[in-house]
Length: 139
Image 1: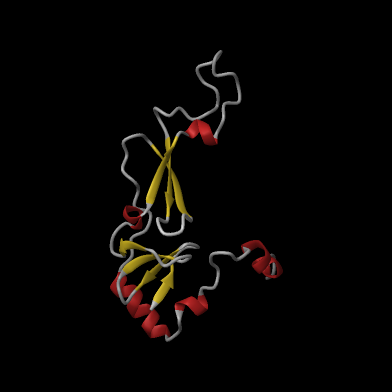
Image 2: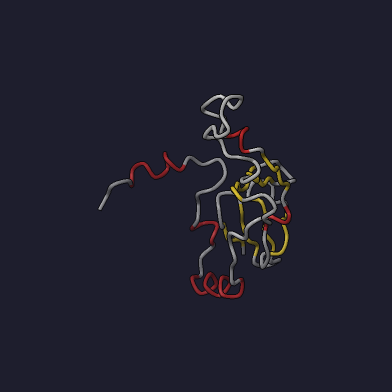
């Protein structure tokens, strides 16, 4: 049984592994941090948030200082899909953004008796805005 957890991540409950929803690449133990199995690009925040004022004239330019902030981008090694991005201080390890009780997750889905991939349909290549457009603002 495979449970979609985010747009690009799925947990395979049979193997207890994190997988890429695009190419099925394995990221590692579903009881651990999927980020350990990704490619990481440590970005200079000034590449993303360019200075608003002249950095040659001013110390503070409204661009994040790389000595205080770094941007980590996580990519699937199999297909290159960007899985996650986070802003953290330099030297800080990658955050653990999801921890799941795999046994409880398995029990809940077995009790429901439905296929999670049929119930949770939003994923790679789908337009979330278009898909939910008709349901917006209905009471």
